Image (cartoon, rainbow, N blue to C red; front, side, top):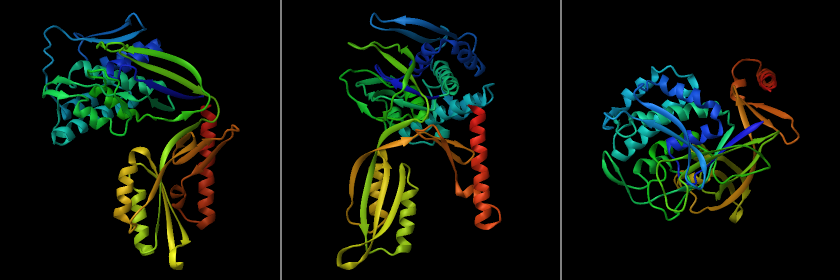
Length: 393
C-alpha cells in the first residue's frame, strides 16, 4: 500500500495545528509524540496537553503547551545553541534529522529576511519551548507516518500585521514568505496570521505536491487540528486526509515545456550551456536534437522540462547560456508513476503490478570488465533492490 497524506489548510497552517491534526487521525501516537518532546529537554514545568475541542461547527483536537506563569516568553536563543541542544537530545535518528532540518530552514529564512547568515540568527518566539515542542512533535509524527508522499491545498495568505520581537511585521510574515516560495497561495478576504513561521517551516521540510491529479485512492483516515485563533465564518483548522493506493500510483502534475532552436552557437559551447541548464533547481530534463533550419542550416532543437516554480528562472537561463533570441513555452500535464530509490536503484511498480528496477549507470561504471562488467554489476544491483523490496512486502 502506498500512502499519501493531504494537508487541507482550511484555516491555515501552524505547528500546533499540524501536530493536533496528526494526533486526531492517530491518537495512538500521542504517547510517543509527547515522549519525544520530553526527550528534547522540555522541562517538567511545561505542561503538554492533547485535548478534544469543538467550535460548534467541527470537532477535533488541540495540542497545547502550557508554559509556567513565571515564563515571560522573551528568551533569545542563538541557532547554534538550539542546534547543539537538540543534537544532544535522545531522539531517534529520523526524528533528530527532521527536527534539525525544520529549524535549519527557519534559520535560513530568518537570516535572509534580516540580512545575516543562518548561524548568526537568534530565535525569539520560535526559540520558546512551545515552538520547540511543536517542531519536535511534528518531526516525530512525520517520521512515524510512513507516508510515501505528501500533498497540500492552496494556502490562505491572511492580511494585517503581527506583533513580534522585531516589532510589527506585515502578514504573511517575511520569514513565512521566504519559506513558502513556490507554494500556491490565495486571499480569502480574512485578516490575521494564517500560516505561522513554524507551520511554514514544516511545509518546506515536507515539500508537498500541489495541484496534482490523482487516480482512485481509498480514504483511510481523517484528522482535524484546531489552532488558537478565531476567524469569522470559518473554522481555524488544518485537516489531514490520508489515502491508500494499492499497486502502481499514477499521479498527474503540470510542468513547463520550453522550446527553441539554435543555429549560430558552436556545439562545444552549446553543450556546456545545456549542462548548466540541467543543473538548475527545478529543471527535470534537457533534450537536444538535430534539424535543418532556414537556409538549409543544421540547427539544434532544444526542449526543456521544468517544474512550474522554476519556469521564469529557466527562461532567463536559456537567454544567458545560449544564443537564442526567443523561445516558446507552454504548460503541459503529465502522468507519472511513483518512484522509490534503494541504494542507487530506481524502483517503479507498473499498472500491471510488476515492479521494475533500473540502476544508475554511475554505480556500475566503477570496476573493470568493460561493457560486460558494467552490465553484470548493473544487473546485480537491480536484482538486490528487487529482492529487498520483496522482503519488505
